[in-house]
Length: 577
Image 1 (cartoon, rainbow, N blue to C red):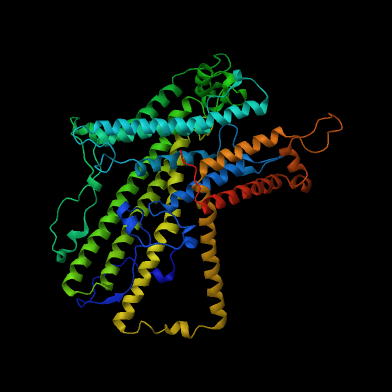
Image 2 (cartoon, rainbow, N blue to C red):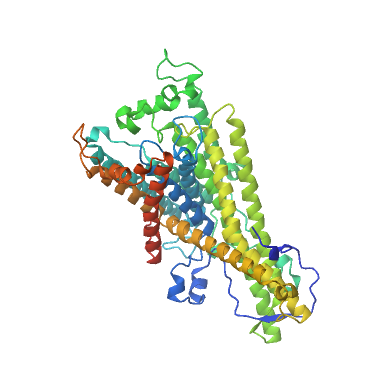
């Protein structure tokens, strides 16, 4: 939460004196979300020791933290051991909700957020750019999307093949659906939709320039320029089709899913009734289509349905689409922040030329600029939080008729968890992206007040009269808040930047432990337990504390991967697909 120092930090400065207040500083924008290559080259160099854990300037810190939180929970849930598992980390058999159900939808949501940030329209800076035929650019982008989606799916097939080795079965029991397979497929569908929107859809308008608010800059209100020479191809499509193009995919998936779900298809007409089509896994339309497409030999644990099966893939596309929509707001937000800073830099350059004082930056301009930046952050934060809360409420409301089910991936489950991912992202965005800007604005307010009063070097009276015990309290409070924030950034941020590598590594290590026999033989059966089971039996299994022992064991396994993630992030080694 914002400190008391930041109270009133969103108040518009309308009482600034027209006299120039200056503050000598070597100011550098400390939290831009994206920089151009030219700006990155001109940026001040950072010492190698401090640069180790410094995020790239074009990454959204809260998005890395959400991805890290998802992979942290995924490894924790998948590494449960023993006869009893921790309650909230266990997937419900069919209908219900637990913390474990939040992991997979979060990955789909995050993959959607990254789509608009990674793919933009044609630009002269792109290689092989042909302004006369921009369609070639989109064809190349579509092939890149297909290649990346196929690479993610192939990683999933690698894990499936290793599962055959682990179970000592043949290829006739190969499982085609899977976690990475679904992520790759849904990512490819939504990314192709994004390219179609860029090519034939309505381009998102650039934000209004703050030059309208600063008539003294001498600039005329004009249409904001396109980003880096970005061009828009001629569009013969009707206006309605251009505006609604991005909504065709989610509406189409939802309609097809509803028709398939309530079309009356049954696995067994004698045992399955109308009421059991949603309540019982064996009678669900999910089981019907999975048996027709995959069969029990190629499904998860040879069940009649697969949690990553055919019909549920349609509704899982909704999670990626919700993330894509949030990614579009982030891109517009980036453009607005860059435009704000560019307009103020232009204003400062003009005033420096007139006054010939390049070493001084007007403090009131810094305060005014930071006011607009903070308002932009808080506007985006409010939009994310309240819309996420609304989608959660809609999902819960409709779950009264269509229950939440992760194995079936009902439409209510997809909508609810999209809202939940969006709400969690907004909280992380406030704490790790917006709050530093709010604190920066509070410092500028203090500097401005000190310059006005002529007492910038005088310590406040309340600080001088503060008791020793109170000083100790504030010191301890600052220590815990600072180090807690640093620890969250270190652990979750490092894991979020290598999420796929950590997931695959954890799955391969777990599978390998099942292949290695360790420990004494069972006196009744004469068989030796595998390394995974033996490592739990001779550690937390001896404590006899039920599900807590399984939780502590999984947290110990996660700790190993946290150390691996920190080491890889320290060495700047990232596995990218």
